[in-house]
Image (cartoon, rainbow, N blue to C red; front, top):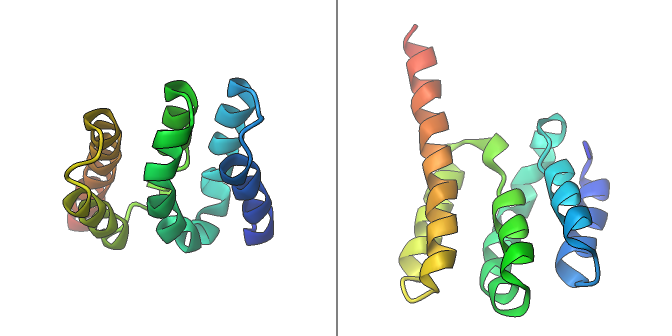
Length: 123
């Protein structure tokens, strides 16, 4: 999904509806964050953090995990995403431990990417 319009449709089908089977949710989430459309991901960062608690509270664990991990825009791997993730964790210290763990793992991925970028810049 390289463009914003396609991502909007996919986002709505994943977040606003809850009738898709697990495999479709997982596959659609993977397509949503595909690096070919990385430029269009930035506009979804606020919506991503806004959906975390409602998705966690309303979906099965497996679907919630697919969405929380699968829709995280790791391909952006920038300071703004790292800071937004840290901000959500700071603001939501009382969120379910399993939800916080998923978000912490997403943060760790971004931090590893930023460290690799810094290392590459040094070469």
